[in-house]
Length: 96
Image (spheres, rainbow, N blue to C red):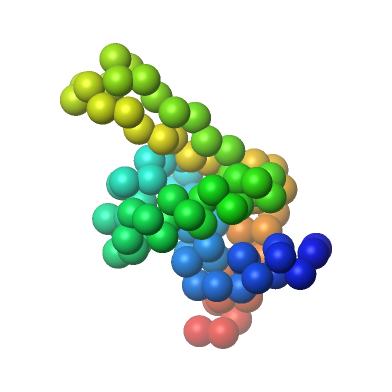
């Protein structure tokens, strides 16, 4: 892993996001902000960085594809992201 990769993953928010996705499966960014108690901008920034690293993939839903007529960004772990989430989850449990 590169130095930039470690910078992203060793912060609390990215680790929480990865473990949350591992435990709960696909979700929307807005829903995750409420579930984790984080700000929307912090989550979207972290998701974007992890997407560039190949840990998360996202899909924008068009306004006509959901009930309220709003665009939503559905996110999920990639295989690599799941492996990293497993590792981080193990570390977090060891430290509790």
